[in-house]
Length: 110
Image 1 (cartoon, rainbow, N blue to C red):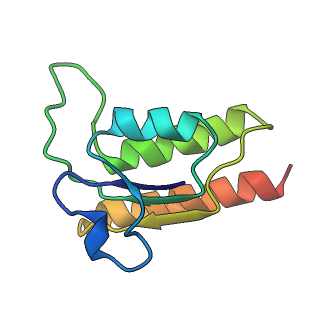
Image 2 (tube, rainbow, N blue to C red; image 1 turned 90 degrees about the horizontal axis):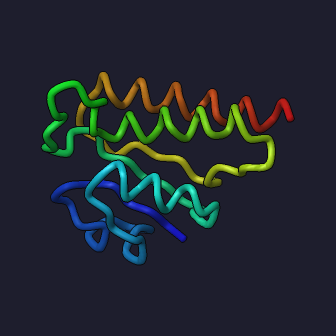
């Protein structure tokens, strides 16, 4: 399954993502990722979501961090084969790409 996280951009307008499941919140993305059935993941960062008073960030990077932690904690969990960041936020993109590199390294070290 392909998974696309974005608040406004429809995956149908992007090559290779036309058939992706479109989610708009980190919580939805994590629910899908937790099933282990996601093969392709593409993340936007700035989702226009309210963080709440003391809540954690609700952005694409939080999904990348969750995925990295899940791979580190569970040797049986396999992350998606394809990990992409389609965010225009250059700082968040670099952080996501670093998390993706870490995920690949963790899998390779198993």
